[in-house]
Length: 257
Ligand code: NAD
Image 1 (cartoon, rainbow, N blue to C red):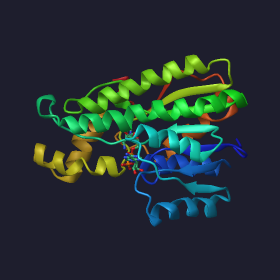
Image 2: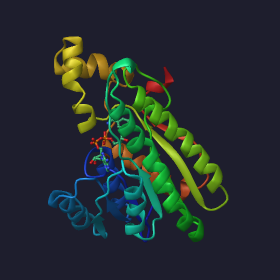
Image 3: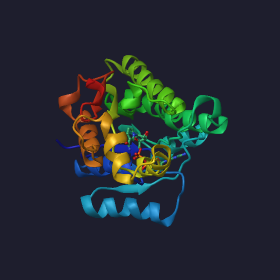
Image 4: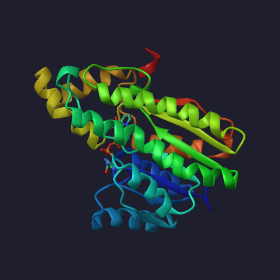
């Protein structure tokens, strides 16, 4: 599979799953636009190292996905966008009565609304070109629920719905849209949940990983950022031309239970 000549924008791609996706698409020959909100020299260095490793054009564009105007500006600054991967996401864990309103709003803005804004800005160009891919990174929590993750579960179910609508509107235009639903992947967003879970359950780090997190994953293993990147690259290939409006789980069997 070659994605040479295609330009991909991946939101939230300086770490974790987004970085794995950027590397996989660059490995398949695509030009990549790496994004986060921080805009530090280290962020730019990530794009430079992708360019050096894979021999493709790569650049960093800072834009805060909690800001609708910035999300749309990211697409404008990228120029032509053939592949849009909406990956930026945050998490907060609390019971509904105590859930901070600001956290609810931020999760909705970053995990769901940003995908609407980037898609709105990128789809016209894809329609004009007669080819495009939108891949939304949802979650096993886009298909199932867990307590204390109200905003995250609501936003991830929302992005699965947005993916279906995008697919229907884009059908027949050479543009597909799908949602990838990872189970647990050991990235900073998951690392940050471990200390709280250790306190809540009175468990060691190893016990939280095996008895709380991976208890949801029958394989007993984390999915990896490379695996998620590989699935996204597949969705961008010609083999996936007729895969649209669906979800692809990468969750070690979580949603089969
Ligand atoms: P991560 O914390 O490693 O990466 C999140 C990325 O989003 C970072 O690059 C960060 O800079 C960026 N980001 C955060 N807020 C942003 C903002 N306001 N504007 C722009 N960028 C912003 O987390 P991850 O695990 O790689 O998560 C990536 C996506 O995968 C998220 O949507 C997450 O919900 C989803 N996901 C993760 C897991 C998992 O187990 N790690 C499972 C299912 C789904």
